[in-house]
Length: 440
Image 1: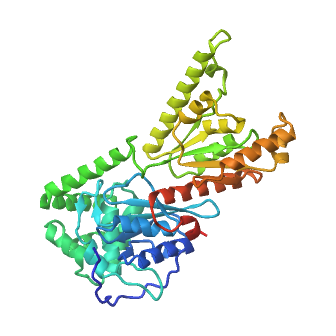
Image 2: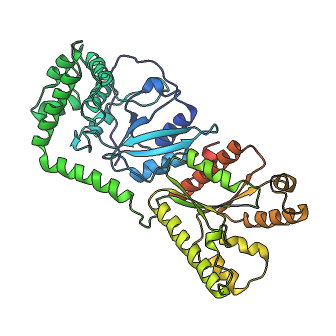
């Protein structure tokens, strides 16, 4: 549903803000998609955002918003926030994550149970300064942030009380009569004027803010008890559901790290646990055991050992896929597909290669043979060169990427997480422009 445009109201200029280039690209993508949106708060921090960039978008356009932000290199995290909160992350070349927190309603409370129903009206009143980003009018922005400070579940601190006082002071000179103001009047609790008077007093503190929050919440629950309960239960259900390991194309990813010994697979996998914005688990899925406990004893029959090997691979493959289904990143240290490097198409090798589902992405860590052999001198140079040629052949498919493993570890890990994040975006948005191009 498109939000009808109305003439922008005359407001006091609040200065020209030039957002961070990646944030500006995301805003431009929303504009190109024909979507109504506005920055909720933090306009003066957009040039170098250290926290979330809070954006209100029109209702009923979830897919359009996701597709538009993907063209700017921002992918949606698989786990929702409270109410309609959705989080989109973009990766800078430095390894820093930029986060856009998108909502399509103005709702408040621990579970976003108090829906003001004013999002569309506030978007109709949005404004912008020169070529700056769309934002709410100053009264609408001040009311939205003030109710966020009062009603959302963060601890009541002196700092938050002082922020509430500063916001009330912005509203004191000229009562606006806008949509949020009208909603508060209709609740039958503290009037907008009384809220502003109580908080704009420099002596107002945590206790005063807590008392106002309780009164507003009680009034909101009395006015729409069934709707508030349904919203709270909906938030809880969505958050619980997103953590269940259920098959879904929009959860996490399974990524296999391939390369010869010395390429740095284990080190890169460990660094991904620090860099990735989602939970990371590593699984060893080499076709052959890598520890003594995985091997049968000397007297174990060969068929028994092979059956154990198949069982081990199957169990770890299922665990990896379940972790991805719950929204995480499953990193496979090796994969049975490497049996192709040994030549031949025996039954055992086909079974080993086929018992584990194909990952969403193969990352081949590539480096000159001399570099790899210097790290692991156990193999002759010609063997290392032959191994590298085989791995490069595995990296030719559309679901595979080669990463230069001769660089320092931090650079290799950053290139790897960038490849993973691009694959995340291509998986999520069929038919959208390649996020790798938008991110350059």
